[in-house]
Image (cartoon, rainbow, N blue to C red):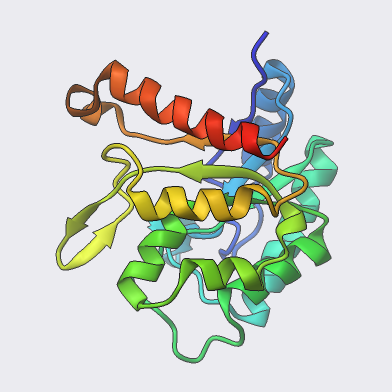
Length: 227
């Protein structure tokens, strides 16, 4: 029996609206049904208030790294953990806009979130690479700032240029800098339990089943070096 995890996108953990109790109940139901080792969500908001109650934004929107957002996210994560009785991980997101008046850097935000909520981190290395490319910083320096003890799962993926930005499009095999980040991380994250390769099925004709197998084999080799 293969191990299973339950990954979600609709919690809207950074929204300044009431927690969707029915959505969390569904997270719990799916996690229990599939025997998921943990549940995970994204650091983003996908629901907004339009004057008539919450409505779906249609995409995951960037959250500023503010104290108020941190408090919202921590409270919501604690609720999820209590309601689901399962470990909870938060995934770092790609961002295509920045907020100059944010209270803290992303790594500090993630460190504080994990410490205050009792959650772990799903570190998406391709999202990190997107941000590093688009905003000119070192992904390896970011890893140095992060509490790597909190990293439980890693995502790797490929991307593409879109409108002058590098986008997290899940369009193929991970580029070499993402593999470099994985190599850097693997030996320094003592609680790492899984590496997930994300790709959109519309790109399967270009990647091919052999290409998927090659990515998985390379990820497994990296995993085995850390044993």
